Amino acid sequence: MSRKGDCWDNSVQESFFATLKTELELSRARRNRAQTRTEVFEWIEVFYNRQRRHSSLGYRSPVAFEEHAPIPN
Image (tube, rainbow, N blue to C red; front, side, top):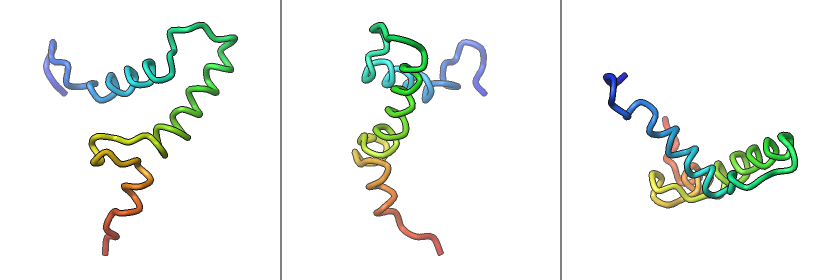
């Protein structure tokens, strides 16, 4: 844990939620909470975890990164 006033504790989460809000345009009104939950779930499970390229993975999707990862002995 960092000390009081240091923002390093949750920078990864803050970055993820900023990306989520931007790419999914969560600022616009939705019909209801269930629709929003469904859109967020689909964005995370279908797009973010399988298709979206991540800079920390060499600009490859998690699926492509896993396919080329060395198999541990």
